[in-house]
Length: 489
Image (tube, rainbow, N blue to C red):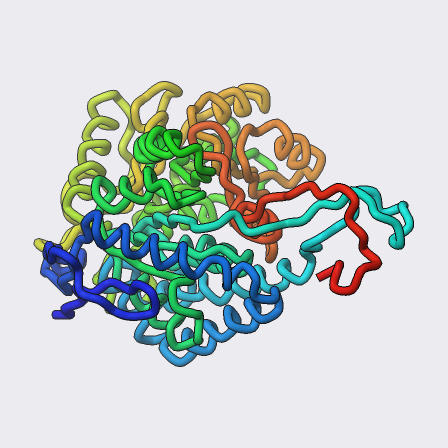
């Protein structure tokens, strides 16, 4: 078992002020795989002080030097990829092949895309480019916001670290990361990557802890200018309230209840694609397409196909190779998913695949059967609430207008999906669906795009140029002379 009680503060691994042990549980076995310590206020204060002291020099570091150092993080990742993926599989249950193909590679994917977007930033720009450069004029300078607190989840852990820490440091900010205490080991490895890449002391800091402790301390800390949080909508509300006392910027990436609109003219692979996308990561994705809205004329055959796909999905331990889904992250999550499955049954939805209890052949581990309910009516609990597990609700619709109404009738607004062979309809729905993102016929958003939602899914825009600008503030300067030496730097 790994013993990892130290925090990374001011370029060093340091002992917690008051050690408070926390066991990290391997969800495949229900056994502890590591021991960390949860920080207290003294640890948080030390990390914030280190970031505050490092900020002036890091903000003044030439952008291309910052980019050079960030790029070196990828060298560390490449040297330790297998170990990195194994840690993710062990602590949060992603199957090792999936950890190698999808979870761990989030770091180089986002870092590379951020570095490309970074080259497009004009750090000082004229307000009116048509004015002669040799006369004083209004200008806008883009400047790092300051010390930022980063609070990341367990379900796509390094994905969210990369979407926050990389653009923050590129922008010239210094930061304090609190990874999820459920899956902290990959965050600690990221701290090692930063250290070995030569990131200056104090630019990146890490303190483990829970939301009520270190999370709340970061949110309310007077020396932190911004909080970037990914997690539940409930926690996002609490963070917003705490941060309001110091008027810091808050960016939130929260829950979702994605609608997937499947029309009769969808391609032959649409049903399987939709079910497998839902069950990916054992359904533990905020952008999961958890409501499958199906045109009535193909409803019965879609339900049958979807059930067959779900029944074909294997479940297995995270460290075993092969095409399967792993366990959910912990007992609390397992219990919650089981409660929702029972509610679906009690409220009259038709169970067509999966169901309550452990899958056949398992008596330990937090495994959930890939589950599908048909005949789900709008307003049922499983149609309204985020389950965060491998549970798909299928809802019939008669018309496009009805489908849009059902899809938009949710407090969430992260990702919606369209399956249709009609490009005019797909374009129309892309504009009508109320969400931060719309995915059409399984096409990815592409390199350099952002991730983020609307309504109670939060309004962060993480990724690409938008993700960088979240950590920058524009400053207006009148009478700026672009012809002066060094004026454009």
